[in-house]
Image 1: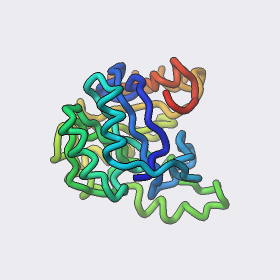
Image 2: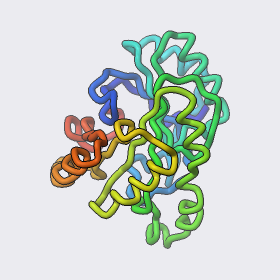
Image 3: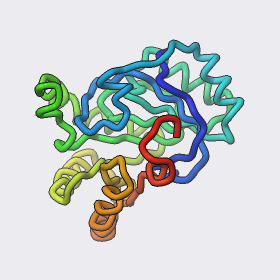
Length: 227
C-alpha cells in the first residue's frame, strides 16, 4: 500500500478532537480540492510502498489505542479492507477519514465522512482541468448513506463562508444525518484565518444544533506534515 506518512499525534478535528492517535495517511485521491491541505496525497501524490504488516506493526508500537486511517482518499487503496482487519486484530479503535465517494466494507469504529462542498471545486487551479471530474465525484449521497450504516459516523464539512451553510443543510438532509452528527470546520491553514472563521461558524453551529471543530493540530503545530 502506498503510504504518504505515518505519525503519532493528537486528533485535531471532529468528535474525537484531542485524542492521541496514530495516523496512517494513504497516498492518492480521486478528488482535487483547490484548497487541499495535503497536496502530496492528491495533486502530486508521493509516498512509499509498505506492507500491511509494516503498517500494523507501526500502530502496535506507537498507538495508545486509537488509529486514524486518512489520506488522500483511503477508500481507494486496494488493500484498505484488509488493513482495517489487521488494525482491529491489534486492538485499535479505528477512524476512517474519507470524502464519502467510494464504498468499501471496512472495519471501523468511527466513519468520519467529509463530503466536499462546491467551495472545493478547482475552477482555476491547473487551468481548471480537474474541475469537471471533481464536480462529478464530490457528492455521492448513496455512498454516504452506506458508509453511515457501517459504524458510528460524523459528517464533517469544510466551510469557507457563511453562504456554504445552505449547501450543508441540503446535503445533511438528503442523507438523513442527525444534526449532532454534523460537524463544521473552518477552512484555513493559519491561526489567523481559523480564528476569524471560527467566530461566525461556531455561532452557526449554535443555531443549527451542529458541532463545531477547530483544526487543533494547525493551531498547535502550524501547517506542517507529521503532526
